[in-house]
Length: 390
Image 1 (cartoon, rainbow, N blue to C red):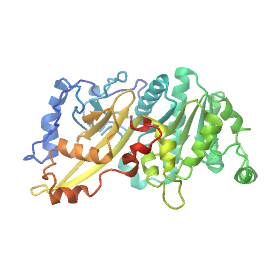
Image 2: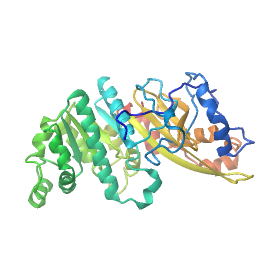
Image 3: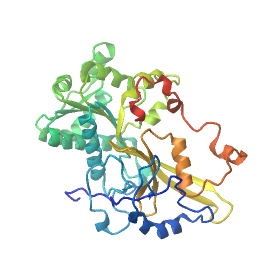
Image 4: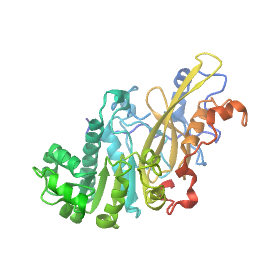
């Protein structure tokens, strides 16, 4: 792995606001990508509300998927108007980009932050277990904590949901924690909590190889990173923030908050008000949510597959990125406010030239359905904070 992080082509491009990159009569996306890709880096980019051009980070494989290596070994600072192309070559590079975005957000006064990206290559998800994702998130969280500490010297406390997971993860990553000389510590969301559940945790928890007092380490920390929490544990995060964190920075790391929000209000889960009063206060500092779609057409190849991502890298705007065959993600639209996922799909379809259904027609209705937004995307008037959208 290279010591210097590399970044894909940062050349600026310009596209019209319509972004109909593919004529509707040409439905072969592979042919289109090959013919138009050389031109994408030769244009000047406009600064309208929606702009940019087409592509996936190397998240799918963790390494370069195609193209000459010298094209991607250029990396620069985060720009406030976003990226034209995002094509990282490793998870180390993605983590570095996330750390830069987090530090930039903290310097702007934001203390509740969200980081979201796939913790493992998406090409082999079927062979992965839940423990693989849990361990990957802890590993990436510790890596990010080490990078942040090296930059600003902050003492960072990594949080897992409960004591059982804490003991398991602490044993696994104890060598890394020992090398930090106390600057990186681990704990869990219910550490130091009084009451029946806290007593059971201390009574039955395995104390072997665990730090003497994770609650004490939490009180000394300058910053917190929370990983692997489920929907029911979001309430524990809120309590932990009130008890330990206060105004200090905390990062929700790869929690897939949009997936967790979908469970709020269901039987046995926290109420939707948790989104309005608490989760809405978290700023997405670095965000990659990959999406894959398909559409049937009347001519060969009859099924058109297309993919992209909703992307954000603070202080840049929210961007819709279209994935190209070589693995690049290229911007096709951007906005200062978060795009609803229904808008992301529609934007990608327009960029591919597949938005051929007449507006208001039965076919358009059958493809989109009655609603194209979720309840948490709609309820802007109920949000106590607008931070999560900005």
